[in-house]
View 1 (cartoon, rainbow, N blue to C red):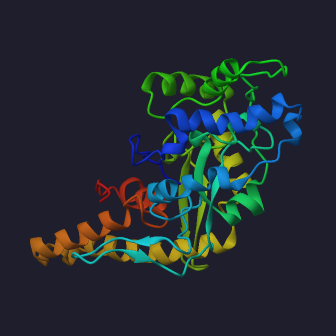
View 2 (view 1 turned 90 degrees about the vertical axis):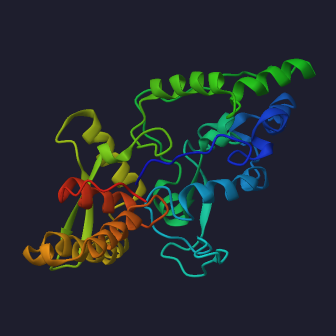
Length: 303
């Protein structure tokens, strides 16, 4: 897992999740409550958040924000002037618009773009499901009595979800989230590199993900994240090893006693390839960065 760099502009945040479009989406929920529907009975519709998928997919390079496995339908980047194209194969099938805080528990965040991540169906539907352990779970910032005016409902809608392009509103939102002290790592708001490390087993041909902190609250959060999202499941351990074997071979080239005989250009090619494998859109980039920089001490910047 690596940190996701969300693009906070007109391209990175779809129109329906900012400005007036954002308010309209929140009103879809509020109008039902206003009509007497109980929060636990709200009939959520995926068509509301589906338009967010293109932007979320772009953020991760088409891979899962949690396990970093490549998904079917991810976009192959353009190379040497040739346009990119969809890739049919993938380790984890298709990815969905994932509600980081489950919509069944946090109904008011169901249409909130800042609560969305690009997640594979295995992490999302087979493991995480509706789990969201936290020290102080959020509570709804709004209450609907049924006698509100249209103006009052619009005001409530504005409170429910900050405009992602409003820096001040987003900052206030971040402070609210920090008070929750969630047990799950949030790749949109923290650097998961501080929580996880990796261990390669050459005999078994697999790479496991482990908590990096030795003890304390952060170790507990790392353990919870690995368990809830299934990040150490067998197929991921094997898939990580395929990438690791390439990383390790390149590492050996740079550190072999005979490497002094390599040309400067050849060494740079090796470094560039390691940097490419560490790029944010590459599968298991978090693992690659751990081994290349933390374990082997190469101090290479991801491409």
